[in-house]
Amino acid sequence: MFKNIFQNIKVLAQINSMSSRSTSTATNYGDYVKFLELVGNCKQIKRTGWVLRNVDDPETISGHMYRMSVMSFIIPKESEIDRIKCMKLALIHDLAESIVGDITPYCGISKQEKRLREHNAILEICSLLDKNSSEEVLTLFEEYENQETDEAQLVKDFDLYDMILQAYEYEKRDQAPNKYEEFFINTKGRFKTDFVRKLVDELQKQREEFHENFTSNLKKENQSAS
Image 1 (cartoon, rainbow, N blue to C red):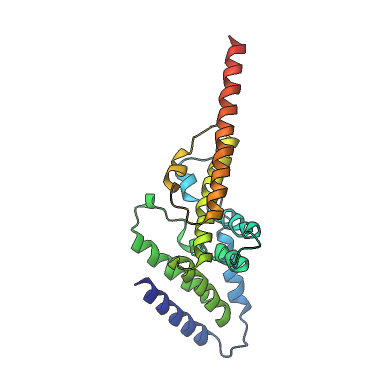
Image 2: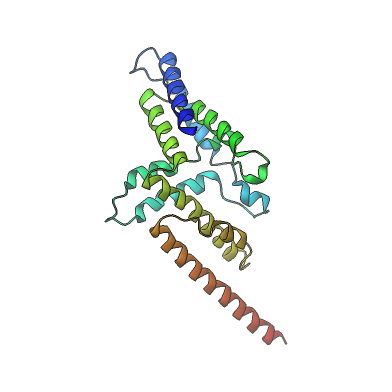
């Protein structure tokens, strides 16, 4: 069903692109500025999951996507994965949130409605681009949503991994071991790639060491106080 939706989006985007520009070489810099302003919204919008949990100074959508894209550099060189495509997928996958915001299951919006809003948003965003760029962004958006390619699945793992890594960073920053355990529980068993599973194992190891050290230091402080 969603493949048909994406095909319709592509057709509509092409129609919008052709109708808004008299020639294929015409450049509307005004639209480009609007596009970049929309992208800039991601620098201001806080990630909903952290906001709902009253996290102090929570990360933005841009911060999340940026680290995901940088993760492409640590993909093993011997892998057949297209690292450049992974970088692009990471930069595009949440771009619709620049208009609709970061919709989570806690927002009371159905998955179908969420997809519809995001599809309409990405179409609006792409209408500001030239034909080739519009098609590329839509193709990347579709690829990530369909989760049928190795690159899309790896980037999805990056998405989940960045979330639990961020949770661990907040635990360390706030000196609150296991405070965000729910994120680790909710992602358990959802990682599909061996590479990211190894990253998760290492993160869990460091998180356990942090908890042990925190507990040990707290015990010593209590003994000293008594």
